[in-house]
Length: 419
Ligand code: C6P
View 1 (cartoon, rainbow, N blue to C red):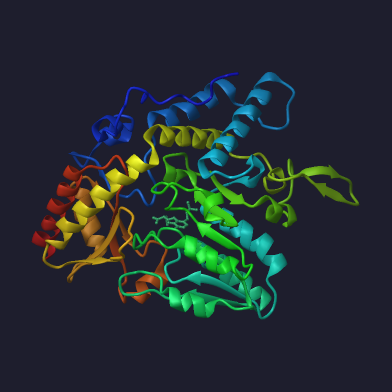
View 2: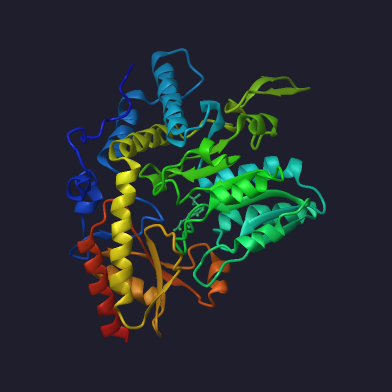
């Protein structure tokens, strides 16, 4: 078979070596505004290693053709590569079967899929859906619209000033009226790692299904959907060092089989007459139309790359970055970290006295430092902390302590300019 995934050149690496790993990411060699790029916007999207870039280029150069539709060589090979990538996702999440992995455009589409299929068929007037106070808009709005349509209620688990879920309040919200829980694994605006095992266990005691928004979780934590026992898990490929426009929904097979299709068209049908359509089995039932083939194969390459790196080594390195950055930022007068949960991922949101986060971002950009500023698609989080926006530095395994020193230098420049 044609080799679709370009193998990363990491075989000789015994232990995690950040300088070596950085060489796999061409963009990290760039200058921005005349300075070496310091990329600290990984929660928005992560950078891509050569192996992903080359895999996508090679697919278009050597294999391009549609999947599931041709008897010719290229179509068959494309189909094999596309399905092989699904297997890689299945193994990465430790799902039972590849038919439990549905390709989507990303986490947003995956949550919408569940809300509009499972939600529409299982939520009725008077029912309740529980989310948390730290959700991304992608895990608020689909449930809000569903609840409006069905005359159901959206309930919100509150959080503390540190940005931790108040689990006693969750206990109080759970009731016979609760029909679904949808919860973020790692908050993109605060960095909090939520106790999702406990959230799932408590919901399951009442037979309530749980969706986990793993958009930020998947690049920082080892995910095992069987061990978590979540009913749905969603993530985006572009935050996992893969291409944009591709992601996945994991769902337990019995739930997916029972759900109506999300979109209809080619490939999701078994037979069509003008009188009746019989739908395909999962996963195809949820993949109408020509899919993002190159994206899926590229995501497979990203997962291969992560396998070479090993998640526990990634986590150890990122923990060091978080601790160092927290200590350095806490030393600067006038900087306040928003989100100080005990269990945090390598992401720091902060505000500065009398300086708007956009001004922080602009000055840092002049130093070649990329961070995100704004509400991070979490306006209710900003309302909770009574702030309009934050500056957010989010780290990946290829970041270094010397880049954090540059961030600190940049923040000191912000103070000199605006302070
Ligand atoms: N957060 C950020 O800068 P999409 O856009 O579908 O790839 O992911 C949506 C999404 C859902 N849940 C969480 C927790 C997220 O962080 C995101 C994306 C980016 O924080 C872009 S807004």
